[in-house]
Length: 447
Image (cartoon, rainbow, N blue to C red; front, top):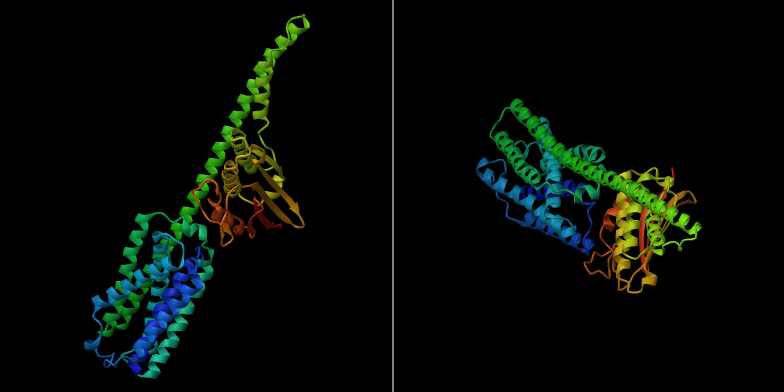
């Protein structure tokens, strides 16, 4: 019975710690419908496996090397566990295979580090399986294992894992590097099992300590590499967004300069016609007046709110609306958004207005093609409100529009990115579609 309990406890700790390690990262991903039901099914499956291990015939003394599971089989089993964890993440969360691999290799690195520390503590305390195969020994090892897991997981979570956001995980795309990390992770698993096998065969403690230190260092470097991948990816996205803002600002300046020059030319022409009119000539050419009106309209599309990033994106979208026959009305206190980075402002308002433009384009009545945007300070918060009419049906799931390629629905693209941007600043994003109008509201605390 003691051996069956040992196997059940070993499975419980190994699988549970692996789930906890992976869960540190995967928990931030978008959950699939029926998440709770799927989670309960996994818990039931784990309990059933533990129950089976408890009722299996006792195979003999685990301290006898002849009865131990061969090293290649153990490596295959733990590699299979990594693959199972990837499948579990994909089953529970709406994520790509590469994001799931990232979460699992990062979580498995922490789990393996804790496992190595546990083996070292067992050796120092003299409670290894060979030294004490009794039920009491199994329970002592279980308690020490749990303590080691907490000693590793809590600092890792507080220092690293809690700073990893959903947006960063979803943008993981360096497939070659992730594939390399999977291979490295399998090597770490094999290294851990090899140390255990050598320790069972009488490896001197000094050598075991040195190998355990090397194993822990390898786990730490693997995790640091993965964390660096996230940081690097986030910096790449922010740099690309900033470059788009700067490029659009330069184009905006060029448009304004060209429009002013065009207006000056037209004004020069009309001065000649006014002079001719004063001398008794014909009336001013109506076509010239129309040209001037068009140039002034385009120049007047430049928006000034007190925030350069907001001015840039609103000017860009104002021109897009004018070309599409859409009225964009804007009342914005841009200085209220000074706490946000230029890249986040550009991304947030760009996504919101792109969705609104797509929704309004599908409306057949030109009189209803309008978008309103309000940014203001009110009651100790900063409020952003975007509203537009829509046709057809907008389906909401988890508080966000369901992405659709049909033009009449038009909303959903970038909505998840908008929520992540708002939440990064401690705000909340709400979406409402009723009575033929679509509302997007973001609230940020001031100070």
